[in-house]
Image 1 (tube, helix red, strand yellow):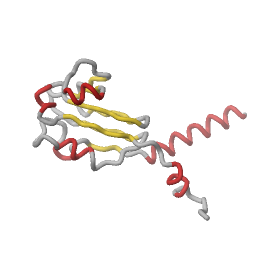
Image 2 (cartoon, helix red, strand yellow):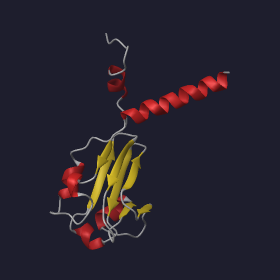
Image 3 (cartoon, helix red, strand yellow):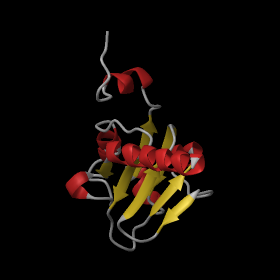
Length: 139
């Protein structure tokens, strides 16, 4: 009986987390393609406040694709060691843990021209989360 109760609480916790997660469409109406100006995706990335559990949706047309890469490859616009490649659109990148996430087109020229995205996922703010719990009164 205790195992069932623990599993039930675990599932409820996952559902509550997923309700609070956000899905961001990268580039909004523009999508994921050669940037209209060099800082387009950088500017877009600054408009979101991502947290663990959020998702980035990249919409692109072939032959374009998406690479999740390391910090060095992001700044060098290289595709030497991608940690993940997405070939089909829409591609969803899950931001599961706090930290830095880097993305680019596998087309290095597009990357040099601005088709790359850096997102920082902030750790949960426990004090803020406590303030927003239903039924909890703050002194």
